[in-house]
Length: 103
Ligand SMILES: [Zn+2]
View (cartoon, rainbow, N blue to C red):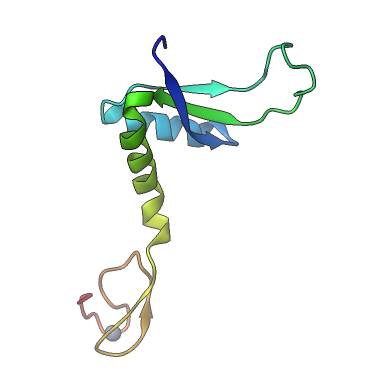
């Protein structure tokens, strides 16, 4: 990459970084996965700092938005069924107890 780049996320494992990279590229956002094994330039950093996902500065906002969306499915808060009062997991749209749809 020759343009100015920014790191939008860091990961500790490569599959996770590759999944994020694939997601951004599928949306037409060019990006690159970089690993910090400083190659002898910084011998004091013999522990890998992480795997960085890097995009062009002009794509930073879009990339961050996309990565936030990637996290979303796991963070849906539970909801309370208005019909029977049971707590329903945020990933479900229908009450497990009485089958009422989320209002
Ligand atoms: Zn219910």
